[in-house]
Image (cartoon, rainbow, N blue to C red; front, top):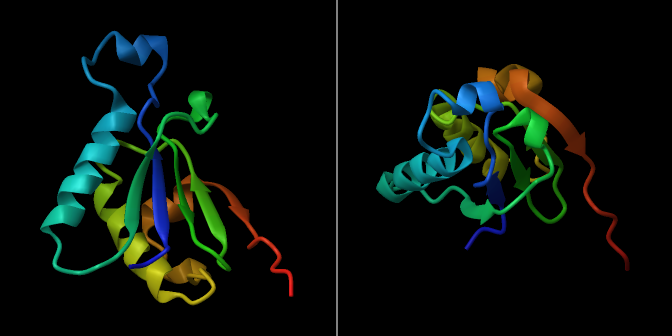
Length: 126
C-alpha cells in the first residue's frame, strides 16, 4: 500500500455570506466526492484521509499531498465540486513521482492555481 496521502479538511467552510446560501459543509463534500471517485477507480493512487482542521479557515477548502521523502503540496481555496478531477489527476502524478516533483507544466490547472505552499521533504537521519 502506498504511503502517499491526500489529507482533506472536512471542517472547511466558506465565509458567512456564502454559508447562508448553502446547506452543506464544503470540506466534507470535497472529501466525499474524492472518496467516491477513488472507490470507483480501478487504479491504486493515493490514501485519502480526513482531517478535522488544517488551520486554513480563511482559505477553505484545504488539502495536502504528503509522503515520506517527497515534497508536500498544500492547496487552498479548492472548490468542493470543480477541483475533484484535477485533484485525482494530480494524485496519480504525485504517486508516480519518486520525490513528489511533478513538473509545473504537467500539473492540472487547479493545482497550479491553488498552491498555498510547497514544503521540502523532512530530512532523513542516517
